[in-house]
Length: 121
Image 1: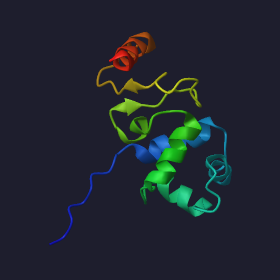
Image 2: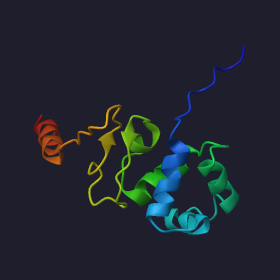
Image 3: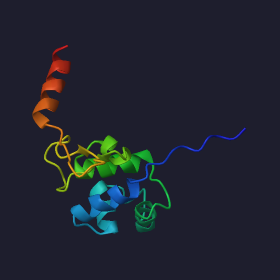
Image 4: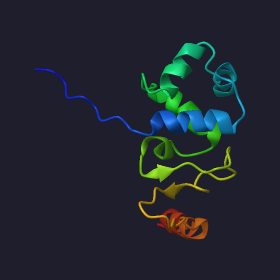
């Protein structure tokens, strides 16, 4: 019995490359920014960005922290990354991918109201 192949995010490589370029970093600079110099090398970043390999969770977490976005924004193909990185607030600028030309952004005020309700409960 073999294991089922895990579904891969189709846009992950594009998002990882977007983060690095938005931060104006080389591939080696990205490794240093993430604090992973003892874990990965430039060739690893290259394979992630051209979708040859999927990065380990530790690396995905480091990318998300460098951009100040939730890991969900990286792995959910329905979410777009903000244009400006790093974000000032984690939820800021993350929008659902639109199938039509009209894009609706999530209101950070509505998000704040939801999270404050959860904190009170």
